[in-house]
Amino acid sequence: MKNLMMNHNAKIYVAGHRGLVGSAIVRALHRVGYNNLVLRTRAELNLTNQAAVEAFFQSERPRYVFLAAAKVGGILANSTYPAEFIFQNLLMQENIIEGARRVGADRLLFLGSSCIYPKFAAQPMREDALLSGTLEPTNRPYAVAKIAGIEMCWAYNRQYGTRYLAAMPTNLYGPGDNYDLQTSHVIPALIRKLHEAGISRQREVVLWGTGTPRREFLYSDDLAEACIFLMNLNQKTFDSLVQSETDAPLINVGSGRDQTIQELAELIADVVGFDGLLRFDPSKPDGTPRKLLDTSRLSSLGWEPKTSLRQGLELAYQEFLNALDPATSPRGVSVHNPPGDKLLNEGDSRALR
Ligand code: NDP
Image (cartoon, rainbow, N blue to C red; front, side, top):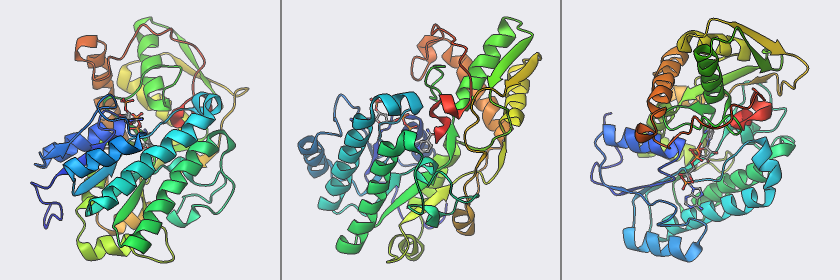
């Protein structure tokens, strides 16, 4: 990368560094030579504790902040703990955004999500679709908290002259993903399900829905590179994203391509070596017919993802196989969870995003 805005010695705080997104950002930062990172586990710094977060910012004074800490979950978690979703996310983001302002951090990147766009947003979804319609009811508390985070970045930029930007990623997958079939996203769930079906020589696997909904996916390492690309934009370009009075400071990050769930399942079956039949059960819910981000704003700045879906799935599968040995697992993935047959689309998983 030429003309880096973030100096290689600058202190960078990655909040949520053990999560899917945060861990990818840390890997990407290390890859390009950023080593002055400040990282805190939840046990070391509970981000919902305002006094602790304020003390942390005062003592560490990071210049750049990646805000990838959040309470995230699928439909079940969102509907069981709606109060926790809104309360914890509001607290975490306001503590970090305010802490960053008080120490004069140069830039902050807040992780939003494609799932906070209106339920019936026109496809592909542009940045200006935010707040233009009714939200998906199942994750409304989470979405409202995230939208408040974006609004907060915007308000701070206007009142305090800060440079805070929100990245809006599409569905992600990658190293450190969650393979628990009860709570996982569609890709890790399919990888596990079809891997286990292959091992046990099942002749058929039944998947929820018609297989026709179209979805977009991005490899988490590509998202992380996009985040670093954004934080390194020259001041004029960055300011054009964060200093508008009329447009919220946000930018979509996706692959720009979607495929049907059936195409995805067939690709994963090929990657994991499952050669049985994939049967779809149309009596189960499908969810929204299509979810795709309009990524033209990011493309026009010169960023494109590097990892094709097939390459990303092969990498993810390799990581899944490595994780079968708990000693080498990034999250100690348990393969002893009851497989649970309630597969497998976003109606049943965090892929709601
Ligand atoms: P993860 O659940 O994988 O990671 C979240 C991180 O936040 C974890 O490291 C977690 O710590 C940390 N955290 C949560 N609560 C606290 C707390 N009270 N104090 C300190 N740390 C806390 O989530 P993702 O990486 O998937 O998501 C990160 C962001 O990216 C979210 O804002 C999400 O909306 C966004 N995003 C994710 C997508 C995806 O497909 N995964 C898609 C689009 C957006 P601990 O490990 O201790 O629990």
